Length: 311
Ligand code: ZN
Image (tube, rainbow, N blue to C red; front, side):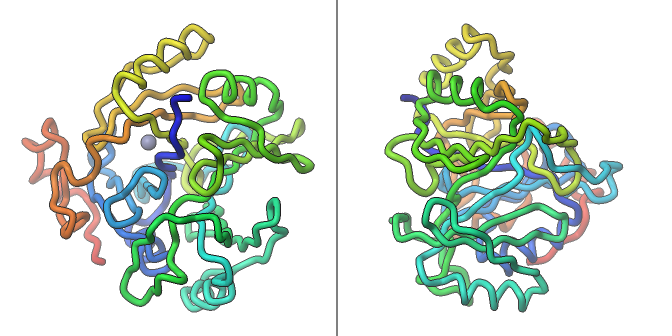
């Protein structure tokens, strides 16, 4: 059972400063790394999470404003909802805080007994806060956020597929997920006993239009494995299963492989190590622009072209 939990979720967003304001000021997440997109060094890559960016708490964004990327459309083959877990009883306070940030909040039907609210960021990404007493993870307590309010980490993601059968088959036979709950149009799968951070909702709809990548859409969801060796073993099994899997890519803070599950959603399998403290002290995570070694010679040009941000 190689998958331990979710690792991170990555989205394409519009404006860098709006994104920082929303994630830090609105959600109380910690910016744990400010780097660039390793495939396009004129675009930031922001990683947010708990104090050290523990896998399972991490939300990451590529702010593509002004780089010629069109607005995307949510649909089949995409993660359409990213949910964070918050303490039971905190949703009223969250509603008020988000409203004060100009964010419109919608009450939604609880999923399998856990109350939730829904809202969007300025790029149009859909988020939920799910209230649960099952999350023992220590939160990052940002200035102005109390421990009985703060986000604990990712609760789950929801992704849309037209036909869930092959997706469930791959996730259960290779990744270690079990079906733990079902509702109309929703199959909940989980690893390692389930709960917040270990849960994915497969939202199935035969008539769903295909999603289109772009601003305001999630690019991929990553799941965590313990070691490089387990990642390689899982890669072999995925190839045998018929998946088109990338080679291992060094993301500096973890190593990654990527493939599309049968419903079209881009999955990443990422290692737990080395983590975000590999190139910064824990107390100063996210302060400086960190570049991978192969981009360092270009630092002056890269810094000049990136939008100025403050936080
Ligand atoms: Zn990723």
